[in-house]
Image 1 (cartoon, rainbow, N blue to C red):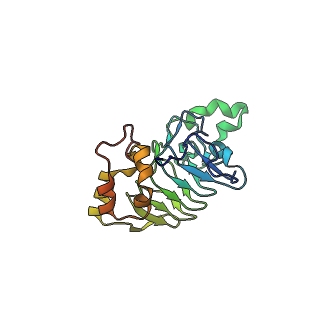
Image 2 (image 1 turned 90 degrees about the vertical axis):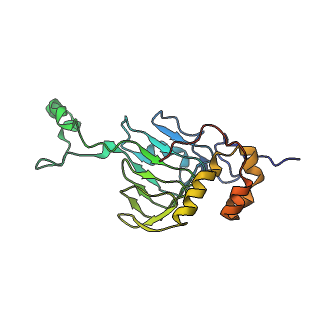
Length: 223
């Protein structure tokens, strides 16, 4: 009997663990895109991810998360709606409070907008990490617990701290290029299932040897 892939449409993929949710079948906002098998872990209410973990998301920018990403408890994405004016004496957003102050809503237009926040495939976020607006995180990156990510993270980079700094890269530049070329996250799921051990614990040589002749269509956009 051939190996059976995990079901990417199940909300709670781990039996007896309601704290873990797959994000693709959970999210409803057209401004959030998540690839298959990316999950969020939270002992309180993981199903509230869209409102508790994606903050100030008033649009039109998007949050794009690739496939096979692991998000620890408390990971938050701050979106461009959090911005305030900084070119005058006060940063307070008076027009949002209503009354006659609302007549000055033009003062809130044209605020800085860094665009979409884009996370690649196979990214691991530690507990309590925060991602600022418009950040792009590369494939295979690791975001340390408690990090505040204010700038872009390279493919297979490990960052940590506040603001997050690059600690090191997981592989040499040549090996990163090889990993990006093999792009195991885009393999047909049946083929991927046959090679889980190689993907998790094999060498790059073994991963390249296991690659299918034709990758799956519909890969996640590059961060």
